[in-house]
Each structure stands twice: as structure tokens, then as C-alpha cells.
Picture 1 (cartoon, one colour):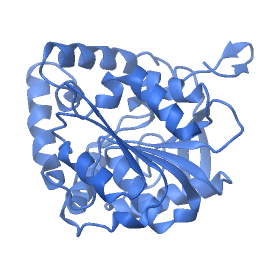
Picture 2: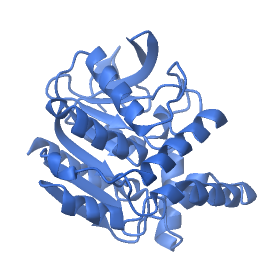
Picture 3: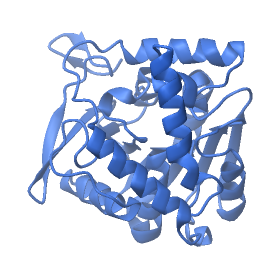
Picture 4: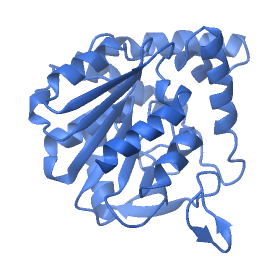
Length: 285
């Protein structure tokens, strides 16, 4: 929990949803934590809006840092139409950051958000101080163009078993993985008031197309990203294969790699306590 509002401690469960105008389009966001210092901008994953972030990760980092989480264009409560390329999403994110009046930020990009974070760092290096890339990979990375197939298969499995798709997509099939999946989904349900709209089918399809295209792109020159980068993933990520994390850490000049055992795409959520501790140490270094 962070600062008090009307005598109530503000955390991810009750943080108000705000809006800011970005060149005529309303962007929905939430912020919490100390108001001083360089803010940490969270960038979300495929088919995700504000309420898909793990409260333990948001609250954990907001205990010491100013955290801002927002919905991409056409996602959740943000206006406009969902964009069909990672590059366009990155430029939107830059517009959002500047609309809030910041000239330097830290980035925490998860999955699709990690793709976006890399593009921001390459195109607007002066805007970025430090970067955390979680469950993500580089342009043209191994298996990224297969995300649609992997996602659809597990969505069908989830529907047949009355589970949320992330139960299968984000976690391993081991007892530890299954327990972590159930715990994670329970945490996502903690906010039971003032939730944003879920992602529409058309927006989901558009994001899948953007990810597929990113997976087919020519590899970017990651040696141009000189900021400190923390790369984190599970050792069994099937959405963005874990080998991509190793590849990114090798190609980034100033990177640190953390791989969580018996964990999948949602490794930072399964190991949220360890991740928050590591992330805060990295951001405050």
C-alpha cells in the first residue's frame, strides 16, 4: 500500500483509473507509489488491460517507486483503435509518457510490452534510464511468429476445462506451476470494483498480427541500447521461448539475466517476491 487518500491506503486494488489526452485520444492509466523520482512505466502483454497486472508486482514496486500503468490505444478504457504494429505502439507509449510531462522514465515491459520497450529505447534513448524486459524477446526472435498458434491452442484447452487461458499459457504443468497459476488468477480477481473493460476480440486479433510481424522482422541492433537492462523469464516459457531471454542478454551491452526455475511465461508472477526484490535493487542501483 502507498499514500493515503481520504484516510484509505491506496494500492493496486483500489487505485483510481485516470485519463490523459494524447493528441486527441483518451488514454486510461493508474498511478501509485511515491510521487518523486523517475517513474516506472509498466507496459502490458497481449490481450491485457490494466486489471491483468499482478497486484503483488505493482504494489511491490510501488512501495518504493512511482509506478504508472496504462492501457494501450484501443485497449481497456483507452480510446481509439488498436494499432497493428509494435513500432506504432511504442510511439503511442512515448506520446503517453510525454503527455504526463516526463522527460525520463524507467520501463518495465512484459511480453508484448517488452517488444514495445525495446523499440522505445532504440528510437527515444534519451527518454529511458533503465529497462526491465520480462517474458519477452527481440525482433525476429525464435518462436515469436508462432505466438498465435500457441495462444489459440491453449485458449481452446482453457475453454474445454473452464479455465482462464493464462492458467496454461503463463505457467508450467508441474504441481508448482499449477499452484502458481491458481494463486495468480486469484490475485487478479482481488480488485472487484471499477475494473476496466476487457480486451475486445478485434483488438486481440490486431495485437496477434502485430506480434507475428515483430517475430518476422529483421533482428534489431540491440548493441545500441546502452541503458542498464534486467532480463527476466521462466526457464520454460512457451509463448516467447526462454532462449530469447538468453539471446537478448548476450546482445545487450549492459544486461543482467535472471531465469526462474520450473516457471513459464509468467515467471515474474510465479516468483513475484523474488522478482520485486530484484527489480527494486536494479532500479535503485
